[in-house]
Image (tube, rainbow, N blue to C red; front, side):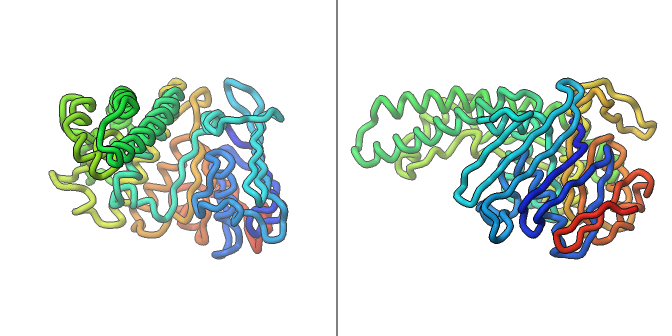
Length: 380
């Protein structure tokens, strides 16, 4: 889906705005606090149903307003014209619509348009804990096969129920049928979830490596899935660790404990890479996912420089990029912006220094907007 028009109402300091987007790079330029990031936040809230800045959605609603609204309109190669909208009020009520029809599952909207978020904390994907890398895997596995979300949801429910049964067993001192039943569910669903992750990781590595070759050819890294248990099967590890789980009241093995091991020259990348190198690597991880999706859904055409782009028939990813210039030196910064422009995806980015983008993106290839105190105007 290509987003043609974005409408905002009562989003932080933005009272009302309509933004006509270009198909490629769209730059929101303005001082800190002008409202640039609020635009990205609104799009993310619409398509992912949560803010990336706060867990309390009411904080996104403009002060004094009863509710906030976000809508986007565009065209999809398979579905034609699409309009997606959401309204959030201060009480927490949410209304989500697609082409005017009420939507009850957020995943149905998320599947329409893959969204990649690139924030200043992007290096945490490399240097942070395993939760971020699990989310990276799950994002890709979901967009490749939407039924993956059902397995993920069912596993989460079974895990919570097993943990509750473990705590109940600790209190009564004896196992019950509920614990056995939920253990079987955790084992079965956990194996399925891990297999989905393993398959996806094996397929996305090649486009990630191609992106690294473009941005930082000196970074030769390897990837391996640590599935979250050590035995031949999750069921056997759950059985072996039952006493420990009862004592702690939580399930200590399973895909909820998984990680993606990233190594550089035989060592953990998080231990040896600089912050800037980590940002480059994390960028390649996200951009590589977009290349992979485009190739799956449509034919690929060569760019002549080692990276194939999605054609218009392929599913394109929308990139939300917030102030990515920091921590990248001039050479890697230029390569990063050039690659992000080359991949054929739509980009909505904020910056206080547009020249950092124009080192890798021609001015004619970008649509620029000025943001000042919540007012958004297209640059002439």
